Amino acid sequence: MELNETNSLNKKVRSFWEQEPCGTNKFITGDLPKMTREWFARIEEHRYDVEPFIHSVAQFTRYHGRKILEIGVGAGTDHLQWARAGCVCYGVDMTEAAIETTKAHLSLYGFSSNLQCIDAETLPFPDNTFDIVYSWGVIHHSAHPDKIIDEIRRVLKNKGMFIGMMYGRRSPVVFKLWVKHALFKFRPWRSFADVVWHHVESIGTKAYLVNELKLLFADYSLFEGKPIITWYDKDRWPQWIHKYFPNEWGWFIALKAIK
Image 1 (cartoon, rainbow, N blue to C red):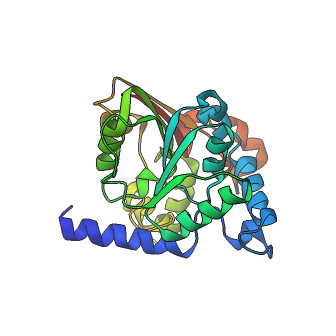
Image 2: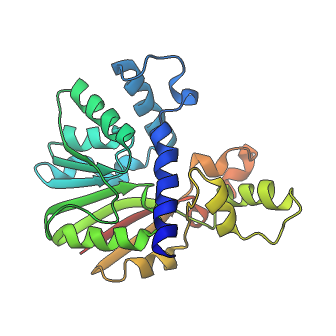
Image 3: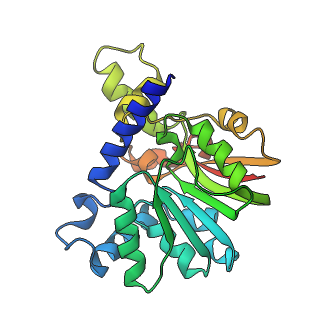
């Protein structure tokens, strides 16, 4: 992808998320006043109701006192958990909306963080800065996820850990999208990757197989990718069939990598 195309794609991604930080739409918050404690509480409740495994993957409380960077802070829900755990918090996001929302969220509970609005393809931190870098469902929106993954490795301390999640392509979520946007539109030749690119959240979204992610993290000393079946995979399928969905089909791939 050429430079102009990269800039254009990231500009479109930024514009999409600038309108509404992830997890803050009215389907979740209803008519609650924005930026209030009740509004944030509803966002947090919903997030951990539909994605309860975040806590077991992130293990926030294990990293008290550690220096942590979150890439893509969104509404600040996970960032608040890092702050509550006593971490030294830094966060970046490509939208002003997410930065302002996260600042307000943390402030309500008496916390603060070093937050910056920047594109994570180039991180403004020295080498070997952080004990933990965390990014949940964000990197796959970038024009160049490989650049972010390389930057994460650069800013991690020796033996520092990346914890996160990226989308999985071999999942019921993607199959449902393919049926809707390819099969039912009489375009069955469309690939799963093409459907995800055009029909999942912002334009340019990517989804992976575990082996593809392993290649992206090849410069790390250790990599683990674990697919997780989610509520999004099970939605709109009869309940009786859920037990036949193996985790290998999960829409979310939980990631851990050590520098």
